[in-house]
Length: 120
Image (cartoon, rainbow, N blue to C red; front, side):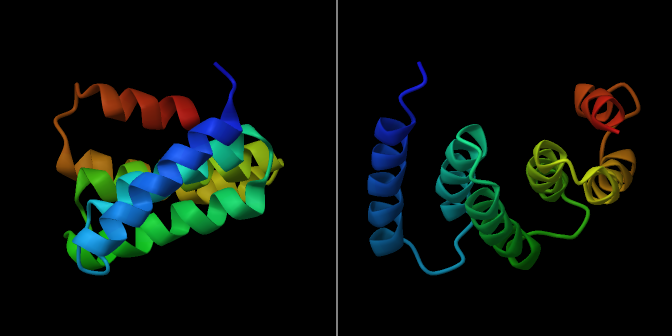
C-alpha cells in the first residue's frame, strides 16, 4: 500500500518483542531484520537497508550451514540493495554467491535457481 512508515513501525514492534523473547542471534530475528531492510530499500535509504540485511545475514551465517538456501536468499536481499544503488559489480558478486549455494543445495529445476539466474 506504500505506507512505509506504518510498516516500519510494526516491524520494529515485532523486532522488540523478538529481542526480548529470543536469544541474540536467533534465526527468527532475521525475518524482522529483513523486513525492516526491505522497507528502507523501498524508500531509497540504501545504507539502512544494507545495515539490516547484513545483520540478518550475519545471524544466518552463524546459525546455519554455509550452503543453506536461507543464506543464499540473504545474499539475494543484499544484492538487490546494491543493484538499486547502481553498484552492479557488487550486486553481481553477491548474486553469484547466492547462485553457488543454490546450485549445490537445490535440485536443478528449483524455482530459486531461476531467480538467481534472473538476478544475474
